[in-house]
Length: 194
Image 1 (cartoon, rainbow, N blue to C red):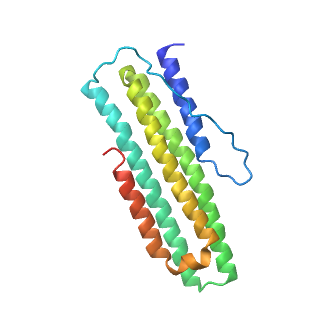
Image 2 (image 1 turned 30 degrees about the vertical axis):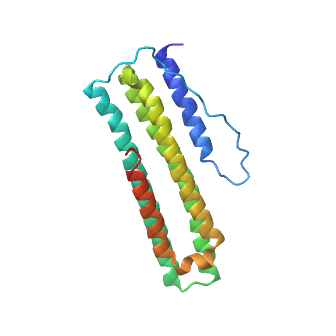
Image 3 (image 1 turned 90 degrees about the vertical axis):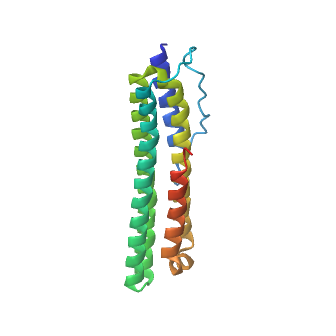
C-alpha cells in the first residue's frame, strides 16, 4: 500500500468513525467502532513550505467557518420557531407543532453534521494528496477537527433533546437560553486552535 493510499484509507476510516459518533437515531443499532489509529505515514519529517503551511491553515480556518455558519443557522431557526410559538399563544396544537419542528431540527443537525464531516474530510484529503508532506499534519489535524465537530453536534443534539423533554419550562426563558448556549458554542469554536 502506498503512502497516498494509506493516507486516504486512514482518512476515510476516521471519517466513518466520526460520523458514527454523531449517530443518535432512535432505534439505530450503532456499531461500537474502535477509533482508527494511525502511525506516522512518512519516516522523514520535513518542515512544511509556506504554501503547504498555508494549505493546512486553510483547513483549520474552513473548519471554524463551517462550524460557525452551522451553529448560527440552527440558532436562528430555533429562535424563530420559539418566537412563532410564543406569538401563537401556546396551546396543545402549537406545542405539538413546536416539538415536531425541534425533532426536525435534530434530524437536520445530523444531516448537517454528516455533510460537515464529509466536506472537511474531502478538503483535508485534497490538501494531503496535493501536498504529500502535509499528510501527517493533516491526519492529526483532521482527527482533532472532527472531535470538535462531534462535540459540537452532540452539544446541539442533546440541547435540542432537552428542549423537547422540558418544553414548558424551557419556553419561559427560551430566547435567553438560545443566546447563552450559542454564544458559548461560538466562543468555543473561536478557540479551537488557540
